[in-house]
Image (cartoon, rainbow, N blue to C red; front, top):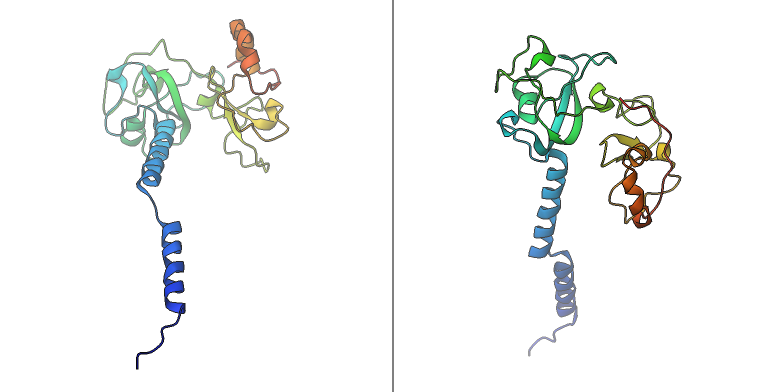
Length: 219
């Protein structure tokens, strides 16, 4: 006599199939994750090259820049300099570096006269880059509070927001942000830059929110 089958097997298999379907990763998910990783890498490194100094490429549209406080000590009366990703590896290993994230239209200073007798191992004989722009970040400080980031003395969990004009970074609380940054937030322009470029006020109506920032001293 044939044994009577129970329903537990098919039901369990059905549940397994549902679980497999819910845990399955589709090609769309994989491509989306790869795109997000690529966007994150571009945001952090821009047009950087880990092997070759970017000096021959001129003022790169956007690249990761570092300040070496071993070669150029941070001081108010000292003109700062910035180095590219490759030079941070090849010329400044073991030095105290300040990560400036990406800067636009910047040409590598490594080895020029700002660095005294420290020559670049990758591209020696560099000239001073007159078109480079520097701010207080090259001294290792940020925001109107002029503090380092991360700040060992700051216990507040606060988001840093970059001005797309001067490219300085600001604590949310020092921008007058008393609540979470709006989800539709894309870019921020600080009040000093709005004052320096008055035409921007014509676009103020497009802002998702207006923040009042403390007056800061320009570097």
